[in-house]
Length: 106
Image (cartoon, rainbow, N blue to C red; front, side):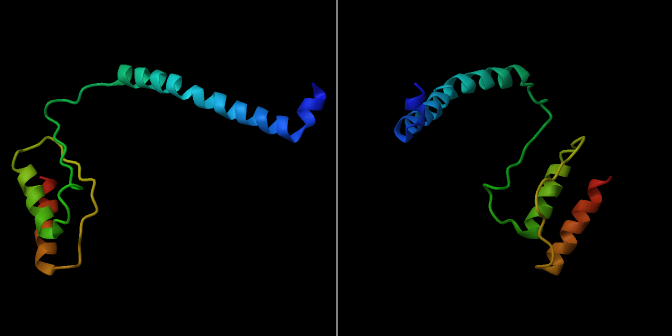
């Protein structure tokens, strides 16, 4: 047996077998983590609204200000903005978004 383990061919075969056997456990691990995450899942409150801006494209500062004002007009208890806002391209649009952001504190 020691002679087989010293042979490069058998060593490579055993390494390939070990790597292949770990790939067989992927479906088991996948099923386990699916069950774990589903048990930890909590439904979001009905008052939560998520707006995905990635599908909309480039709104510009004026469009972002309109969107903030539209959401704010619904009087949400809390509003979270997770986006890179565009400043410095247009002075008038920058003023609109600054006003919209300043009104969020109210």
